[in-house]
Amino acid sequence: MNIIGVEAVIYGVTDLEKCTRYFTDWGLIPVSSDETGAVFETLEKTTVQLRNADNPSLPPVHCDMPFFEGSCGREVIWGADNAETLAAIGNELGKDREIIEAEDGSLHTRDDAKNSLGFCVTKRTVAKETHPTINAPGNSMRINQPAYGATPSLASPVRIGHVVHSVQGDVVEKAKFYLDRLGFKLSDRIGKGGCFMRAGGSHDHHNLLLQQLGGGYGMQHSAYEFRDFDQVMQRGLYMEEQGWQTHIGPTRHTLGSNYSWYMWTPAGGLCELISDMDVLDDSWEPRHVDPAKAGPPHSWYARPEQKGLKFGIPHD
Ligand SMILES: [Fe+2]
Image: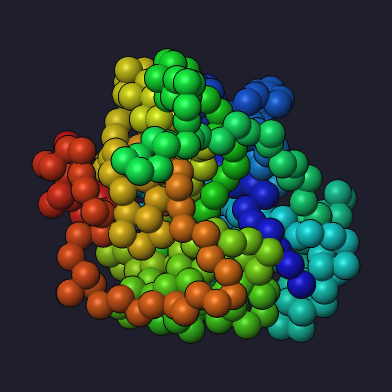
């Protein structure tokens, strides 16, 4: 079976207007909205869905992270490549847990860490993006042409790249649900408490990270992939101009290599602007990184004062 990646992230929120403003500022494209919720999409039509936190259609709250104030990610929907894959997922997971089939044919259940998740046949498209070209000494890829990033612009994210859940207990054991039963592949491990995984139909370094974060549990962040570094920078700076708060960023990760900018979201936890993540194929050998030897999780910090911050913990 092939799951190709995150199809949708569903948030239950206590301030729909504020969250609508946040994701509009984030560059997502509005699809629909009313007093009960709002739907946004990326260029490739992966979606963010906001619903009022007390909407009975939402899965139960599963979050005790320090940022949790009533709003949080309630469900991640994974996109299957076709109907046969979706049926195979239902058959597999139906062996040991309840599967709810919605009117639209999507399937819904919980993973081994009690995170709610769903599956549907993907509606993802392929965005016709221009590709950045970079001039480096000895390797000039752009001749007689200004760089794309030299023009101020505010791009929309291409797609939702990954989600991160904080889980309790044995993370490796919890990851087996995805690795052994849903066809995910292990990309890297860090210490005892982190498993980076990519969906079977994806080559991204990770579409899912299960991680122990301060003993808490719940959806910690969702990440949105932009075409290039300039787009990350221009969007992140714009978000700050609108009054939204940065947690860590701009920066670049060591594992996965992606440029990164984490910002707090009123929908609960963090949203991350990313670009230029590592692309892996089946010849990749997962690394097992010792955090005590690995040093900081970022290769550089544009704002050095962020070096000492605990990831995902609110700060002044
Ligand atoms: Fe991330």
